[in-house]
Length: 107
Image 1 (tube, rainbow, N blue to C red):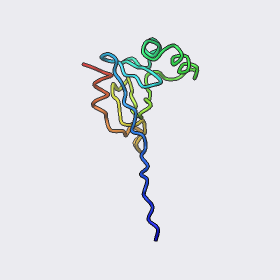
Image 2: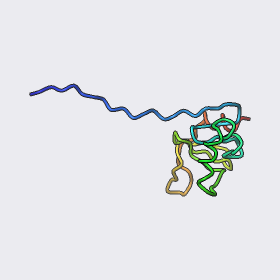
Image 3: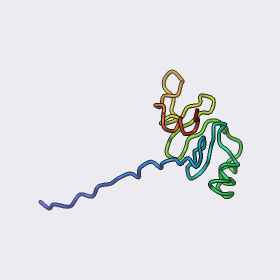
Image 4: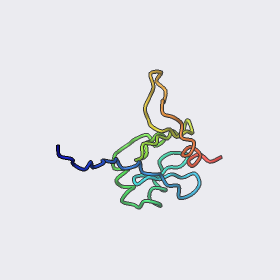
């Protein structure tokens, strides 16, 4: 029997969001505040090219969004969740992320 070394395959860890100032969260594609995805904040923190790529997608709801790491935020609920999926009752089923909710919606 030939023994071969096992190579572990690891998925990249989810990309952390950054909060450049209280009430603002950014990933590598967008920045948002308690009002939703912000053109001005995206330009300020990620640059004009990022803003143009984001808004070239056409009209979309700026108040509900999913960051690159899978965190879903809804400005009407004032909550961020671990994912954007719905349960059988038609309501968001992802666990509430206390960390990202507090960063995006400071009291």
